Amino acid sequence: MTILTYPFKNLPTASKWALRFSIRPLSCSSQLRAAPAVQTKTKKTLAKPNIRNVVVVDGVRTPFLLSGTSYKDLMPHDLARAALTGLLHRTSVPKEVVDYIIFGTVIQEVKTSNVAREAALGAGFSDKTPAHTVTMACISANQAMTTGVGLIASGQCDVIVAGGVELMSDVPIRHSRKMRKLMLDLNKAKSMGQRLSLISKFRFNFLAPELPAVSEFSTSETMGHSADRLAAAFAVSRLEQDEYALRSHSLAKKAQDEGLLSDVVPFKVPGKDTVTKDNGIRPSSLEQMAKLKPAFIKPYGTVTAANSSFLTDGASAMLIMAEEKALAMGYKPKAYLRDFMYVSQDPKDQLLLGPTYATPKVLEKAGLTMNDIDAFEFHEAFSILANFKAMDSDWFAENYMGRKTKVGLPPLEKFNNWGGSLSLGHPFGATGCRLVMAAANRLRKEGGQYGLVAACAAGGQGHAMIVEAYPK
Image 1 (spheres, rainbow, N blue to C red):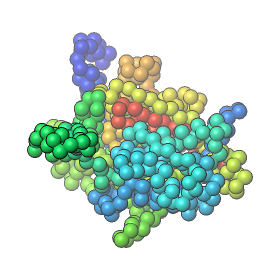
Image 2: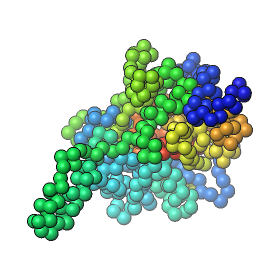
Image 3: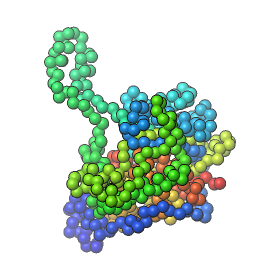
C-alpha cells in the first residue's frame, strides 16, 4: 500500500486521504453497545510539585432541549441563571465565597453580551463578584474551565464558577449592512434636507435580513459540508455513521432511564411546565435512519439529520476550587482537573480533527498512554468516525502530525458510554462542562482513575483535558 502515495502526491488532500482509507473500513460496527464497568487498579497521581491541585466539586446543567421547544421564549441569561441557581442548590456554596465567574457562549445576544455577568446578578451573586464571557466556538465552556484552572493554579483565586450557555431558539438577526449604515447616518443628520437626501438612497433590497453565519468565515464552508468531505476522505460510510449515531442515542436513553445523567437539574420554565430531562434522545432503527436524505451535500453526501447533532438550547455550570479550599469547606471533590491542551490546524481540510491532534499531546504532557484512560468523553457532533480513522492510522500520523506512529483508537467499551452530543444535544457554549462532568461521574461510577475529554471546534481548533478521579 505504501507505493500508492507517490503517484498521487499532487491530488487534493481529500483525494489522497480517500486513497489511503478506502480499504480501511472502521472495524467497530459490531462493538456499538454498552460497556461493562471498568475496574482498574490505582495508578500514579498526576499531582505536580509546587502547583496547586484544582478540583471539580460538582457540576450541573439544565436539560438540553431541541431548539424551538420549551426554551424558545427565553433569553440566554435565563438559562445561564438557571444553571447557576442549580449549582448553588446542589453544592450549597456561599455566594460570597466565589471569587470569579466565567461563562462560554458562541451566538451572543447583543443585550447581554457579557452573559456571565447578567446571569450572575440574576442568580443573586454579589455585584462585587467579577464575571466575564469567553467564546471559542464549540469549546467555549472548555476555555471557561481552563481559564478558571489558570486563575486558581496561579494563586489569583480559590473558587471559580465556570460554565456555558447557548440559546439557538432565538439568534440575533440584523438589518443588512447598507440598511444599518443608512439608519446610522440618519441618526446623525442635522437637517431635514440631509435626512431627505439620505432617504432618497434607500432601496428595497436594503431590507434583506442578515442571519448569523453558519459557515466558516475563512472558507465559507458549513461544518456539515466539512463533515461530509471528511467522511469521504476517510472512507467513512453512511452505514457506519448511522450505526454510531444509533449507539449514541441508545446509550443516552439507557443512561437517562437509569438515572446516570445526574448533572441534569430541573428547570421551571416561566409560564410553562418544569423541564426535567433532555428531549433530543430518540433511538430509532437503522432502517428508519437509512430513509433520510443527505442534509448537506446532495444527493451523495452521507451526513444526515439522524447522524449529526441537532441545534440545542442549554446551559451548564461547574464549581471549581483549589483542593485545600474545598477540603477546608468540608467538600468531597469529584475529580481533579489536570493537564490540558489546545490545538489548531487547517480549517478547510482538517476543520473537525481537533481530538486527533489534541489527544496525543495531552497524553504525552501528562505522561500517560491510551491504555491508562478509563473513560473517554469526546464531543461527537460531526465527524467523530473520521477522527477514529485518523487516530488509527500510522500514515496519517506520519504525514500530517509529524509522529512516527499512530495515536491509537479509543476502545469503544470506554467511549461515551452515557451518550454524547449526537443524542444529548450540543448547546455550543455549554458542551465542555457536560463532557468534564460526564467523565468525572463515570470515573466514580465505574471505578476508573483517568478520564480524557476532547472536542473539535469551528476554526479548525480543538481541546483535550485529563480528568483524574478524586480518591474515595
